[in-house]
Image 1 (cartoon, rainbow, N blue to C red):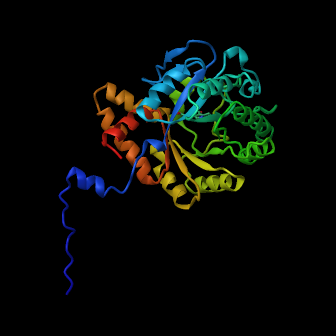
Image 2 (cartoon, rainbow, N blue to C red):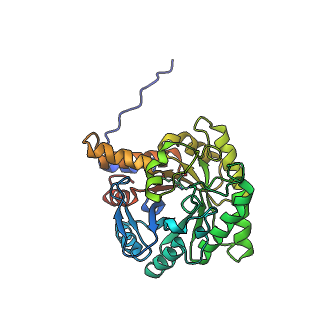
Length: 330
Ligand code: PBG
């Protein structure tokens, strides 16, 4: 008769815990988003994202310097134009002297070696706040938007972006952007696509920070339904076929099943985007003394990597880099 023994309990000293960890976390895998608005000498604390600061192109280097000192080396830039620059199609998104383009040049000057990723979308630049061209029927016109997104990605590449990250969710935009980059000698610039992006309320603080809430309707026509899991796999596969180099899944914590799914089949890196609502919830709960902020941000990040993410985009990147350095996670 076979005796089934219960597993022997390990005495988990700190050294042993570190040795047998199944998930390794590195500051190299973190990306910190920045909101950059048009203007000079801007250093605006964001009420909707406590602890985050909105910069202008000339002050952005201060934020980058602080993050670099903590160990973060990759940044995702969101541009916020003046209200007066907004129009029906979001033309400020691809202006050579647009806010992201200025920010790229300034950041590159100050930090030649950091990785600069740009969010490619139109919602911050259109008067109506939608992510594309609006057809006469009031709906976003998918195909007419592709050309506008390609122009935007191309102008980011020209201004020095290392990676472009389309977040609009139009069908076919990865292929369109890839083709535009390739024909303009930017074949080496990777596309990091928001492959799986669920519609919903977790982006609330971001829309406040970026001034990009839709003026009418919502984004459910082009972002995904939170109930669907197989559809997420299909979206990711389509983006792979179209030439995406890195796949983003967002939000992160409500979608760890999707992170795990995509990481299991995708033959390229998967980034989880822990979005503004996730960050704001932790901040609010900590401010109310309901949770330990540091502990929760560490555990949340470990969970995202355990699910299979290779990269984590998070407003907590600086704190996490510090925690990794101290050995609290990693
Ligand atoms: C632009 C965009 C959004 C986010 C990233 N790119 C907003 C949205 O889709 O409404 C959300 C990021 C966050 O909430 O932190 N389309």
